[in-house]
Image 1 (cartoon, helix red, strand yellow):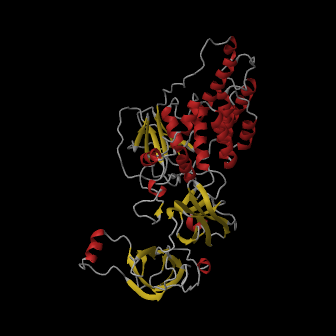
Image 2: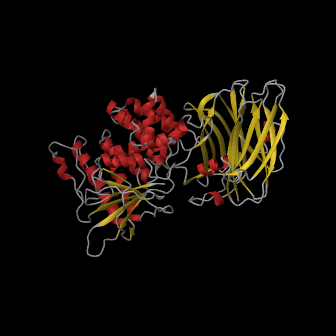
Length: 616
């Protein structure tokens, strides 16, 4: 889900809610005949040389190097001339009606649009030529005035916009601006766009360490990107700095990539905003705090379009769009810490509402969901995490991707365990597209953490991911406990967890009438040799509270679709009791179900574990 922004001529509007849709659209209304220039921050008397500057000239005039005001003003003239050219040459689209706002930010109306198949139109030859001419002029003026950060920012921004990232990086490394922090901030911006996130992080951290305190507070404050629930959680943490670091760490879309591109993307948006201050933009509006907030929260559009004026009117609309696929990257609050459900995993789900902020990594066109399973098995001092799923296939799993695979390029896959803001367990593998992924890793005992299953096809620019919050607490030796359930391939009967990893089922979808193989471990039986009771059944998922109460009062039918029970002697040692069983499924109707196992021993209260699956 992606937000959209609109600026309307008439003030005093109120935001009205509607069901969110999926693509980002940025819409700004500007009168075709009334576009005030951006304010010029240069003050003081104009130098005599300023009279020599001809705004209509296509050549950078010879200016004395001492005439810094004249040089600066001529750079602004070139930049404004290019944006007027861009405005004239934008692709035309039919005019649309008004839009309801999901929120209003200053002069901007934000809403969620549904253009999830939008693609940028190719720029006209005139726009590309005009940008090249602008960059050539800025290069000459920048050589005359190397300490002007506004001119330098335009050079970086337009080089990146043109896709000339190698030249932009070279320029960033030659930067001699007074106050090195701007140089590092612009270098980090370029490196992020080059997908060199590790070095972008280094550049941004240098910039943050050296920038003025008021700028540092503004760039590092999370107020623009965290929703109300996360801001409240952050305010409740005893170490707010560490809590914020953990939030940014978890916001990283893929742990498979080196560096945190969500954080470098956030800092890149601040760098972009710094370069856009005082500059003309395609919307013909002066830059302000509302533009900064929108850019920091949602990014800058990937392309613009211009509507045809309506009959009898001279005004037109400038529409700026983001690429479809941007998502909310910050975790829901319930994933961050143990909740009322105790040890039960909490799936990281993206809420169906307008996001506080959104982001699409520069290496992805789409991010999908993993259909697979992850489970925890306890050992002395650590917890073993196993997972299985299917690697994405661009034809089957990435219909929104804009680039298809040209060959048999492998898919990168990984299983990661986060605790306290650090990755403390990970396993990686190279998989075939559409092939099985089975991994195991371990992490130390801890109160809570996050597990992430990831698979990334770099050539198809698509990834699948599943994340969930989970408990990893230490188990007392004599405490009756059970592991998570795992589904196995049909007919599999492994004798241990190690053997089970190779036959983990890579999908939670099953056919009606298929037999379901399941494995689990039981802990805390000790050397008592007690009899262990297993009761297992299959029930429909999503059963309501009244139905459960009615069954408890024996006013409704049985909970289970099919059930199996048995007793057996427990082990005569402290080792876990590993068990597998197969439960036959009747001709179930398509939908969601749970296989449930209830374990009891020695008169102690029974414990329950469940695993969801879907019948095709």
